[in-house]
Image (cartoon, rainbow, N blue to C red; front, side, top):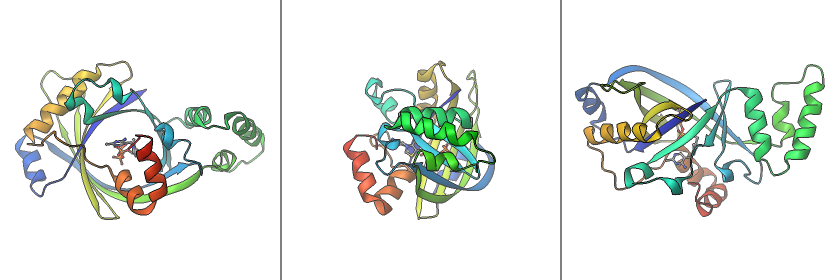
Length: 225
Ligand code: V4E
């Protein structure tokens, strides 16, 4: 299973020039729509689990490590999430998190025995509804660093509700050296001249703050965002 280690940053107007200056290579521009799901009581997101459908594929991001354990300031600017893409595993993880897991599991397994179960039946069984939907225009860059395993990626995202954010990310395997991934991210941030004094809001933070204030304040109170 892969773990995504990433750090967000504010996109300045000269960011593309800076990326080229440090040897980053543009690997393409993509547009995708995300739909995020949770229960009416926000059971998943209050546990920092993020279930989404991106262009027809399901993905679940699960917390990989408690933020309280992060050692230094640079680490605190990074987030680490386990990424699950296998639908059966996603359902199992979601059911584990849901407060009413027993009834949900029973109801879901009953429905999966029915013939021609619609793909989205499990959402109904678990009472999950879409709470956010937005489209992102993404420009992706890769950057190789000498001696480091795996590529580092920089994404410049423009969400259709008028918010831009950049992210530097490294994908590692579960159990791999998290610190070295964080150090690579930190070094790239330095090369790009990014300050490390404050945490930058992600697209979801801004979306919820604007369009789902009740959900947003619950997540703020629970120190999830
Ligand atoms: C993990 C998470 C969310 C899910 C979406 O995460 P994000 O990486 O921001 O979205 P995106 O579109 O860049 O996904 P990718 O293509 O990289 O897979 S929404 C909120 N969170 C939690 C979270 C957090 N607590 N703090 C920060 C800085 N980001 C995300």
